[in-house]
Amino acid sequence: MRKWIAVSSLLLVAALAAGYWGYRQHNDKQVLQTALNNNYQRAFYSLADHVQNMEVLLGKSLVATGPGSNEELFEDIWQRSNRALDNLTQLPVSDALLGRTAKFITQLGDYARMLAEQTAGGRPVTPEQWNTLNRLYEQASVLNRELGKIHSEVADGSYNFYELAASGQRRLGRQGRELAGAGFQTIDKEMQGYPTLIYDGPFSDHLERGKARGVTGDKISTSRARSVALRYYDRKGAQNVIAQVTGEVEGNIPAYRVEIVQRRGGTVVGDPTVADVSKQGGHLIWMLTPRRVTSTRLDLEQGRSRAEDYLKKHGYDNMRLSYH
Image 1: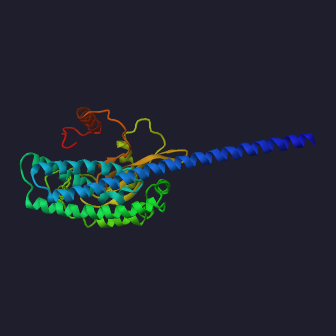
Image 2: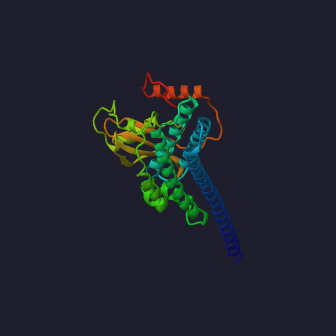
Image 3: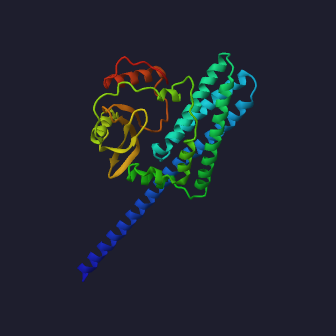
């Protein structure tokens, strides 16, 4: 009898300990989820704020008088676009769905930078450039309006970024369009109407129309595309790294879209690295690893040197800095 009581007591203590441990784990998980969702919300709110300010600044530029006023406005638009793009890349939405939005913000900022340099040099804005600014203003208004709708859904709790991120990680971005909800789908659709932007800058649309050079070799398999992407993956000491082809990209250089993630205990760690590998010859077209940078550690010259070393390591010689 005493032995049975002792065993029962031990089992009760074990059950209570397991229950307490489970309770703590659940609470810790809830705290983590809340923190991540708050971080995503912060990025989204900052994005919406910068886009709204970009629209206002574009409107002011259309009625401003004097090159000094225009130069200051264009500089501010450029800075806002950089910050907006930084926040956009932190959202847990597939790059395929946000690609057009990112392109618009990038081109808008770069166009404003070009006009700032132009007006600073004493050259006035041409009538054609005023027309382009007016079209950019209209498109920024559309983007601001759609972000405002998502803002309302986030504010009333009907849109949860953490749930979107968790689902996207489990499925490795394959169903980003469905998971992102109607809001970002609408933005993607609206951005399809964004007109071609031709100007003297590194992000001008005319650069995409040229014939690609150096894309040689036979058509590769998806397995080969994963291997190529992993070869350029540059995270020292990374373990449990998985690469998967998540789609195909059409355009000037048809390519495979590859996502690379790290897993720890069955959970994806951080945001995926995204790369496009050409179907012909298996050439890396571009690669991006989104992450937060909290402090400045390199100056421009050190950054240039790091970039040159990386290129040489992968067989790209005789390259020159074209943009930073």
